[in-house]
Image (cartoon, rainbow, N blue to C red; front, top):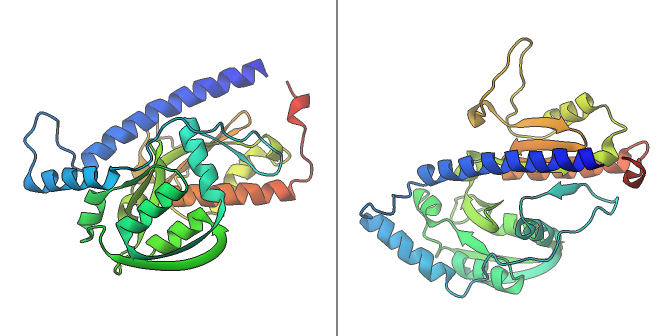
Length: 271
């Protein structure tokens, strides 16, 4: 168990480095100017809108501890308790009824469920949106993540979505989300009755999105998201780099496999 914990700590450290690089890449992709550079009129308007949007919003402060593994669902290992809390809240079943602007609807959700939501206005502006578009939705008894998908699925004819990153729930365009990959770590010890190679094959063949698969004798040493997502197994941890939408598919598939696993070894009896 000591060796396992040590390997997990090393893994999380490696992922943190990759995520920092991804954040830096995002800043370039979003077109964020250096602090010392003069901002354009568009940048100034966007910054003013950002300040107005976030006034009075819940911030990414300390969140409740992540749930322990209960044997009923696959545990997602996250970098921070804030992100773990966000993923938990997204699974909660809620009832929602709203008619008004997109910005107002997201503010209602952020305040009611005490989660930090960041509206990526630059991403929206690239699609010709401002955040003031009319949305309406009335639904009962479904997870918050599904409510968001319905609310964001067609905003004045433009599909939007969300990603959980940097301790907040980011609202972005589908185009941005599909080009942006995240790293997630899944604790898959309960799935060890399955062969590791078959588990990875199942994940990559039974979920959507593009996956990178090495041809015989071929190897790519550097991380290149343009080649597609990746999945690898380290001890009892499945490391997946994919878009937010495909990460959700992976988690759903792993939980389905958990129900179908021929036997579930007791983690407490393993060293």
